[in-house]
Length: 256
Image (cartoon, rainbow, N blue to C red; front, side, top):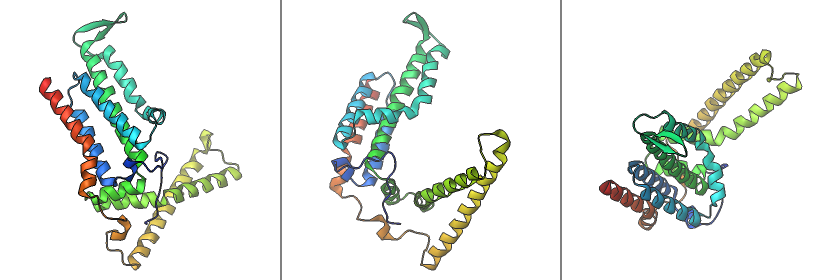
């Protein structure tokens, strides 16, 4: 279980952000996001300051803006919803480029776009600088419930196995003339999904019994976590961004 696993968002590097323990990066990202969410939507300057903080962390992590912006397209459905708010909102109307838009809707759209984008960028920076295995280790060190971390660990370990098995089943179906693109062949596709579920369930039973026979007691061994937890100095370094973000949020609340 100690083998490292990467993921599509992880960018291997030797930057100062990559070298930080995962638990401090998780806490920093969560506190930063909470500070952004707590900021009044009218404090436009505060969101500019948050963007500067994100840009500084991205530069330290050696993550380019093109990579960040292309992955941030995941929030596109929320962007479309935000664009509709000025047209659907109620209250006073203002004229923008010849269009009569709701003033409250404009503020709501800005609130969603600014806070959502900053939250997505912070999450992407965490994923880009931390492997999936280290994320789980960080959650375990932060005393996340063992049930959740162990389920995530086994899912990470055996996801590639299940994907490979599903691929082999698909090739076998196609080689026998099955083509799930046609509506009348969906029954065979559904049967394949059911068979894959049963195989995964049986594999899980065998793995669990094998672990019990090797002394598994409900917790992963301490060696699985690798080296020790973060030092006080590393916590102080990682606290720079969330402390600045909290200060910006507090100032924005006082001035609003």
